Structure formats: structure tokens, C-alpha cells
Length: 126
Image (cartoon, rainbow, N blue to C red; front, side, top):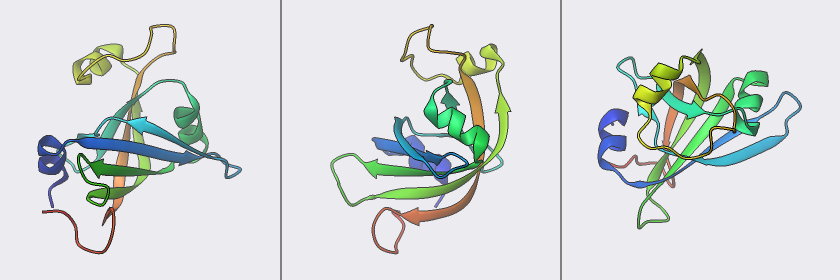
């Protein structure tokens, strides 16, 4: 499965889960990731709990549930690889705008994908 093709052609809802250095867990709704040529994935993140947790613990998980199905989708295991706070790059990557300007600086946070699993069962969506 090519993640770029999957996310380009599949509608649904995504949840990014992170944990801090003490093990406190957080989950938040996130758009589909931007899939990069090297296979990494990037999210635009503001200075909120998910971003703060990734600063303490670089590991995260992303769950994507396909639209109109509670059982189809994928899970990604992630590890932070890079970060970019250049606002021109952020604006270029942005697909839409949500949140107010007073909610902190937006950053592009890039993750290495260490595992791809189906949402349910053992077979990945085609």
C-alpha cells in the first residue's frame, strides 16, 4: 500500500495519539497527513498538548477511520524525525485554515512511519 495514494483518495477521520515523558496520554482529531517523497508523514501542529507531548516523547500513533465505515482504515506507528517552524512552508502545506491566530505558532512536524497496520484485522485496505 502506498500511503500517498491511500490518503489522496480516501476520505475519513484521523486521530493522533501522543504521550508525554511520564506516560500521560492525549488523543486529538487531525487531518490526513501529508505524505512526503521519502515515505515520512507530516502534520501541521500548533503549540497545544499533542505538540508539547511530542517534544517530550517522539513516539506517536495515528489512527485513520475511513468515511462510512467503522472498521476500515489504517493505524500508523510514528517517530518524530524533523520540525519546521517556517510560516511560509506551513502556509504552503496548509489545505485549509482552522483555529485562530492567537493559538500559537504552527509548525510542520515530520514523522518516520515505523509500522502500518489495518484498523481492524490483519489485511490492509487496497
